[in-house]
Length: 467
Image (cartoon, rainbow, N blue to C red; front, side, top):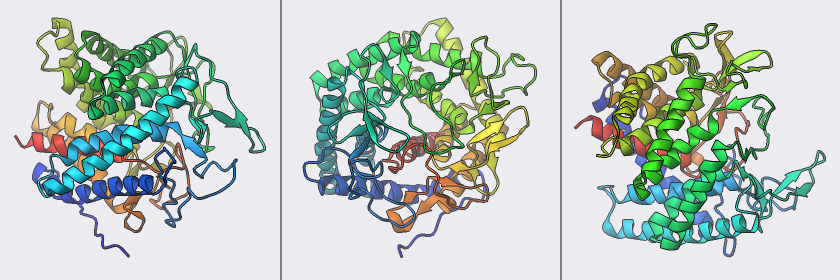
């Protein structure tokens, strides 16, 4: 048994929250070591390997069989691209750690560099072989597939006229890798790829590719149902591209995407009279009204809270630019006012005192619809809470934001971390905070993306809050 005692925070203060930092450093470094060790042992296999049963610790990557979606013959593009971005982000974070020797930092950086270079090369080869896009499921040779009803692989030809859901994550991975590796050719390719992605969002030329694992979490394109998800996730990409490319178009696109989500999905100015102020609607109908899923108006609290975090990640990247227009400065100021209120409202709806945030909340019923609690929305909310704290206009709001961060950290460290399986997180807890084998998106475990990158931002914002 690995020694582990979760650090729980009793009061909502910056000083108290600082107590969790060493524990998160330990968890994040263990995640990096796990990813690197498993990649390095796999020889010619060019993909990241987080195929681990978090309940038993069983290594799933050795599972054989061409149709086994848990083994390494099935490559999850979402995991690969998220992992590349996460490794690049962790490499930068590692340089800031005061308790690692220069030799240890250099060794980790070089291992990350070798890993990122190989993985992004394999992903780019697959993307170019498939009309410029990646797909949720690919085989080890980069060929997209779906499954037939009897579980057989059905090879898929991607349409080059469209982008696919996996591109949403890969546009970030390519830019992050180009920057980390100092690869000018990849940097230019990232710019072309991202322009195509933005164009696809604006022209409704993106096809969803996520495949279902959980009957309670239906995915896929539904006629007449419009999500905020593409724009929300792309705010993280726009933060990265605005920093690396200094293109005013990225500033305009990011502010436009935030405005789109606030105007169409958030109940401001009594837009949806049947709902409470600041209710966040996951899906809308073509006429702009809330879309009813199985008769209910649904909020995914994790997605709404992730929007606050990624929105602020973008805004914090651009807010000091000298070329902002008066209108853009006003948009930023409005977000600084609205986001802390939105954070508190959605958190109150979604948080279960047992320790987690529900998957979906029925706004028309004012209660959880799917009470299962995925792991990823806790670190995402911690990031959002500290970002909100750092712009809050009054002490009451600042305390509320710190309390949200405290509750999320306590829940994550107490209920989700499995110290006996490399400090990986259980993917889902039920409403009583018991781990259950429910897969939110992929059976591959998080490669430092939701947990690592969100927590890195949380710790950085925590340090800035003390300044």
